[in-house]
Amino acid sequence: MELITNWFKQHFSNPQVVYLGLFLLVLFAVLIVMGQMIGPILVGIVIAYLLEGLVSKLERMRVPRFVAVLIVFILFLLFVVVILFGLLPLVSQQATQFVQQIPTMLGKGHAAMLKLPDLYPEIISQTQIDEIMTAMRLELTSWGQAIVSISMSSVVGLITVLIYLVLLPLLVFFFLKDKQSMMQWLSRFVPKEHQLVAKVWIEVDRQIGNYVRGKFWEILIVWVACQITFSFLGLEYATLLAMLVALSVLIPYIGAAVVTIPVVLVAWFQWGWGSEFGYLLAAYVVIQLLDGNLVVPILFSEVNNLHPVAIISAVLIFGSLWGLIGVFFAIPLATLVHAVINAWPRNTTA
Image 1: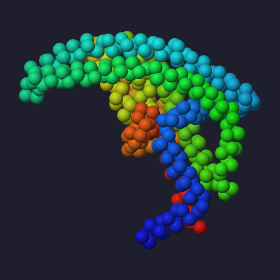
Image 2: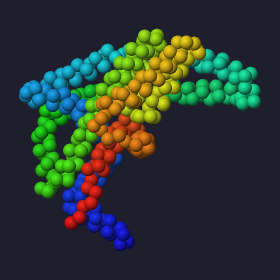
Image 3: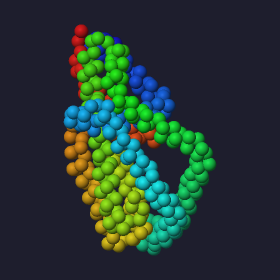
Image 4: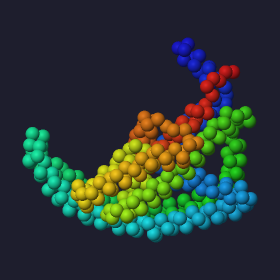
């Protein structure tokens, strides 16, 4: 008991530490309880972080902030329009074609697997092959039923998407335009002695800002590299697969492992074990190696790297709390926790 008491006296004797601890507890409680409700606000903050770098650069060029915000916001809207009306229809078309080709792929896969019992009779039998294919067909059928059920109830989903399309741009604009006034308003709730809070905020702001902007450029670079490579080699569904590979960088290790499966399967069903399959696999490995050993170190040189165990733990924890949204925001939230730990005083005494 005395050990616990001494630990509390050592770490929480400073009122600033107590205030910071309470603030973080309230923040995480709000995220856990209301995470899905305030989803547009969180997404708006992330996008504002992304665009703040461009606004700051224009301000350093002596462009008034309001004008800089307008320029960046218009460019952001143009980018969204290109994505919605230029890229998404193509991705949707390729996704539909891919789903329609699944039965054919299953047939080719079944034919290839039927050769295994002759080659390795002591490992696998014809009965096991039939059981595997039956299980795969049942699983695909359940996925199809789930997709149909989602499409049947898509009215609510469509309304939600429309709300997001209206709210998000407004939130992003006001987060950029009124950043200073919002920060001043929030400072009213901070105690006069807030050196520790200011230190933590500076660290968090630097880490999260660099992370968000770095991830945007990493996604863009990987997307372009995969699109050019897949298209040049003639891989089917090139745009869809390039998008999946690019978005997979949001979930380190796990994302790359998962997205490799459709890339390899599509290439194998298209070319078999031919030279084209080897070229595609080699090019894909090179892109992954360049991303991990060149692009990431350059873009995230100012961001503290998280341990792989911390990354996997964050994905599991926040994914279980908020599903797919939690998976996407797991690394920024883990970076937030890491930044707070780095800024937390090592020894606080009265």
